[in-house]
Length: 109
Image (cartoon, rainbow, N blue to C red; front, side, top):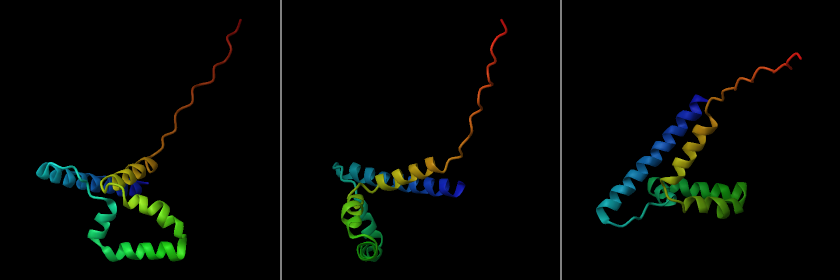
């Protein structure tokens, strides 16, 4: 549980850092143009993006790439890790049991 929360917070703050980078570029240019997740992945490691596409289309399910993954790659780069991180933090949080109220006995008449 704590490992999932740690990974979630790392992803969330990675998204915050991409958002800060986009904000700096916006301030310098005066034009809001956030980087897309696919472009960020391609800039970081183009061969892994090509490998992921090949593996998903050949060995898993080809409509998965065209239907879901391409849409994910076209999202803003800060939103994807922030959303994934927030989801991990929420799913891996410790669940506390609520105390049940004491049973109420009927009053004697």
